[in-house]
Image (tube, rainbow, N blue to C red):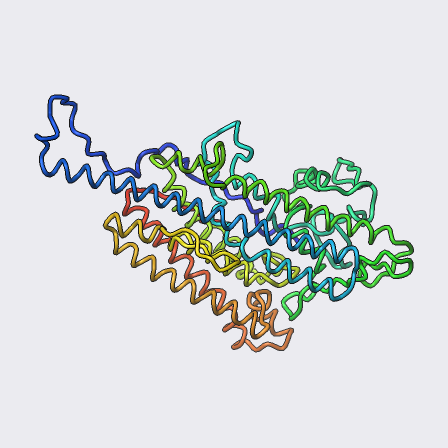
Amino acid sequence: MTTTTVPNRKILPTTLAVALAGILMLSGCSQQADDTVSADNQTEAQIQTTTLSNAEQANIDRLLLSYSDMAHAAYKDSLDTAKVLQTAINTYVDTPTEANLEAAKAAYKAARLPYSQTEVFRFDEGFVTANDQRELGSIDGWEGQVNAWPLDEALIDYVSDSYEGEYNSKDNIINSDSISVGSLKQDTSTITPKLLSQMSEIGGSEANVTTGYHAIEFLLWGQDINGVGEGAGMRPFSDYITTDGQCTSGETTNTDTTVCERRGQYLQAATQLLVDDLTAMEAQWQPESKDTLRSDMIARKNGNAIRQIMYQMGSLALGELASQRMQVAFVTGSTEDEHDCFSDLTHLSYANNARGIQNIFNGSYKTVAGKSIGGYGIKQYLIDTEHKDAADKLAADFQQVEAAFNIIVEKAEKDGIKVDQMIATVGQASKNNISSEEQNKRRGWIENGINSLQQLTDGIENAASAIGIDNLDADTGS
């Protein structure tokens, strides 16, 4: 998988929202500096405005509490499903069979569903308050170790002879005790979570991803060498067998079992690191916590907190999902820029990213166990602040998004037409005996998704403007 088309995952806000602290609060209706005026002498208009100001504050409090509860629930689900994944991976590494490999893949698929809905919380750089007592500075700064993509898989393990990437040495972390990246030489003799963390972006290349979901995905599925044709990665379970004469690296049978042992060590280390990272993030959203991202969000209720929420919604919708994750691959027909390119689960990541934005709008996150968490979202906040038209417009926009992504998921899950097949150009598809008429229809599913997100972002910006947030500046991507 090449890594040159799309910038890596980090998107920094284009506006320092802290400069606009206070813009969200309706002017308090405290009386003018005349201490001699008694409550009995207040006019009816003054009393009414004071009541509205109190109601507005209650709306903000309720919105931020709901948002924080949803964040906690989504990260807790992500942690819990990652632990289930870890158990499945440990079983697989201990007993590498086809059945155990499929069980680990199923656990990976399940773990991605809640995490993909958390990505709306990610775009917080430039909003949160600096706090040396807080374990994590921001979600955006933390996210890279968990969900970075695309990755240069040749740094991790074997790849096909036709592979072209920044890292092109035959030595990799799994098959060598040391590797060289540019002028840097790295000891890789002992594979641990700490080593993988230290090696992330080694040599200054964002493509040198060694951690997170997508490293685990690669180690379970292997490369998808089918291009825009049908099929995902087909890594054999024998890649993890530690019996003499049975340890493989794809179609190659190794002379000893060392590489298979190290492959298992890498997979377990990456999974442990993922669990550790999610444990740290779940703790940041615990109720009644202090010096956390949750307490910081609540403390900024009279400042940039609502701007942050609206910015996050628009930036994931347009800058990340519509642009970097969808449009770049769609325009180029590049499967190398497909988000979950090893497993062909991109359709689910797309849909759950979009669902995460909708969760914040509706004020409801549905847990893995089926419980609804939240209770108050941007939609009701708009209604309660007398902007029902903006709420209705956004609700209609979200319906269009949901409809577009439901089609993408249905075609992938039920008909087996995955995103890499949908983004193929007509010329690429013709090599797989797909007619131009059929391929244009498939590309239309992706295009409709992109267009619906663009329209949604316009609605988010208009809604932000309605409640006094000018120049939201949601990231527009590339």
